[in-house]
Length: 423
Image (tube, rainbow, N blue to C red):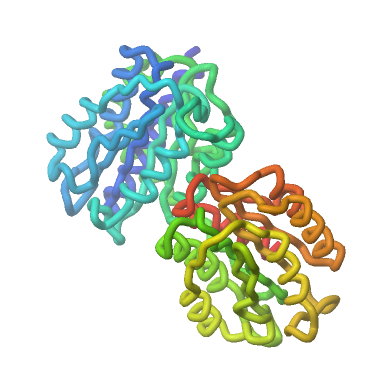
């Protein structure tokens, strides 16, 4: 038990020490993402909140030094306060003590992290470009969507890791604090920026033992002086790979509006911006589909990156059904030499993005198989209403399938998609 408490103390001081170190050297924006599900007994929730309070004790909290924000999560996501809500230490510490225990029947960690990414670390809520970004995520279990949305438990876990990776890719250093025997070790490791950033204990009482409150303040800066900021993972680079890539964009009625369709277009353009687009490098093609399919950009014309991005940006939303078979057939023709394709000379890649099920699933599978038989590697990206099983059938391999719960979440998988495209 003594060793366990000592380990907790060292880890706790590492967390606070890391933060303190950054406070001494630069400004810091610290976000707390707090589990408030019903599985946490109310006195234990209070202990958890006091632990967060202790972490903040060494800091000079002000708009020019350290800022703090918090969100709690269960089946609901409850914003507690933003970076620009309180201007001094008294206000922040008081608000931390008053974090609400919502006692929900689900643990939607992915939604809390999504909120952190989309709302907390934004300029309108006080986040600063010149501040170190840090998140402390607490949990007493593992991701569990419950009945709050359509995710299975495994899909929820995957979304948690995607949102955590999105945070880390944007420069947030993430600590994961797990309490109890129901905690998923792999999920904690996936959330945290590294093994050294994981705190795991058996009970909430262990967060308070061994004079943690007093020693934390004494040891934070001492530990911080010995701790350096782990490097932010570099963005995936795909500059050296030559390929023919055709994107198939769903523009069916279910997309809903030009604004939503533009989210789809922006996602594709953000991927393209990371590619070495040129006649003798990567060539880009694009197809839009609903009732019919249309190749709006041939590979022979998709050889100048800025021009490609501008062309795709101007695509207009249509309406209709979801005839993926026609999109697959159109792409198959688009990969031919007459259209600018280079079969046998460079990898040929088809990327399908859809929010629905194929109107003609049998023909869609047949056309996808024809494409694969021609040596084309298929990626399938699904949004909430898509049929995951069908996408796995169309794709060349399981890791080529990606899934998000809404169009706005597409940017959370950009890094993962780009990694596979560049593999």
